[in-house]
Length: 241
Image (tube, rainbow, N blue to C red; front, side, top):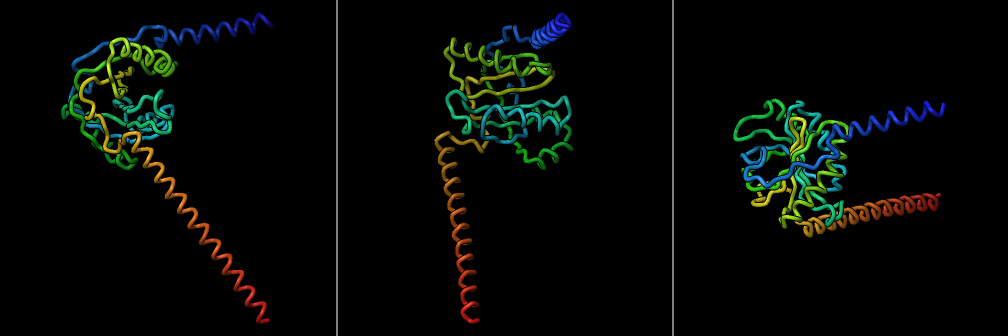
């Protein structure tokens, strides 16, 4: 019995190792500086949703937009903050899809209505220039693990070694791969209108919290006044009797 369990365990470990190899987990990522980055080296039109919160939850938005579109659709995720420096509840991102590239439609127009119904906004991104570009396989087991544990650390090390400054990262999912871009030149083209500097976002959240607190306090006072009014009515009836 022990040998059977040991054999099964060895089989499971071999399977996991095989999947890690297939995902390219042990490979060094292909990183380079390019003058014309993939897809964003052209003028593109996207549909996106703005998101604030932990980047660990962005995958849900990626899965959402995938569920609305054909399998061959190009998915885009833009990360505006360094999650090692900014608190996770203040991290901002935009997630969506590429609608057109240099005027060539990538998605059938009938999907536009569906995207709008689900709250996606439309934006044009003029072509992006010089960028650090990393490409890895995607769509197999452990792809995300490799992306988070291997590719991003390798990209960060490359950027540090080259002494580059890259304020944001972009992920592009298509054709069973993911391309990560860290633009080195103009990045304002990638900033959605909803984006706020971190300090301004904090103030906005504090203001919203204060308004919510005041509304709750007002509702509580109204409830108290109603109860007191009911008590007074009851006393009057008793005295009349």
